[in-house]
Length: 249
Length: 249
Image (cartoon, rainbow over all chains, first blue to last red):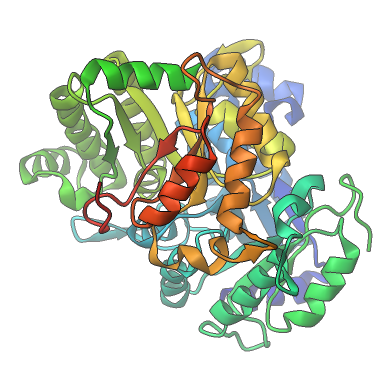
């Protein structure tokens, strides 16, 4: 199982943190940017090439001390298809270096469309009989608002290609409570989503007791994090919000 | 306002339907596919080029009788960055032909990351002072599970660049009720999301009484559709599920 590989990487590096690669062009060192601007002018292609070079530098430095990277799809899409090409190349480079890659895309849809997202980010795409990897991440973040119809197609791909997903449960942002904290009977929306993760995960259990269905639970809400940790014993947690957003250990 | 332009297109064509462009390669006519396979082999590039040619044929045929297209991002992403290039070129082609383009991406995130999605799909991206359109759709479907932190960054871009969003409220799929129909006090989750649409929309009102914040409400649940139509007077509806999924007029 995909989550087993993540756990093994964590044990090997003795480090439970994932490095987010959310590369706005302004974070890229000047000398890299200037080189690309000179070659490609101030274009999306120049930006995408600069970001790729920067990402590779980061991966070179961290690949033996960090278990995983989490590229945020939005920051690649904002540089158009050239940016999306950089996402692909970043994923491939990190995997070559032995890192676990979780694409933070928060994708969500239903049926055949969710199958397309699953093929895109985790599985293989059929082109006239050839099976080709479009992006090839190890895991993908997803939004479960649409219910099982949005998650089941992913579970198929997880089984087939040894991949994982992380479902948004309690997000780290200030307004996450507007919907997620509301009560459905005695249970909050986020706890209801958490239960669904355990249910979905039971189909794709790994050898260390965690399933292929993880949950996103923000460090900015430590009480809810503790509550979910106790309630979801087979669900691996991705915990954003530590540090700059205000969450602690 | 973006929704005003959509309404004007609907009046001009006397047609309230949007054409979904969800182009799996198997839908593309053989003669187009064979031509591209011959030139580019069985690659993601061949698939992406075939889909683009097919999309252009469709747009040529419909642009004066249909007001809008809705490309589904998943079907482009499954062909990798080459597919995403086809998404860009499809959007640009349809806009040149006067069509309104809503990218069905169901994007969702918070703060700066949601700003990146907004720049990517609706606004402009800054590259060393140059402002460049990455995808340039007129509207984007989004998922509001994360609350206002996920929607506010979009509203800024909607105001600035005259764009719109459609928020998932009650989706057309069978399991949409697993979360969306649950009751928070007297109100369902979907009705709560609908209320948020009216609230968010009040910041971006158009001249025909509809705001820049639309809602996705499936035709497969006619009772809930009628309920939402009455409850959300300023919210334009995108209604999937008509036809193959079982919904009627």
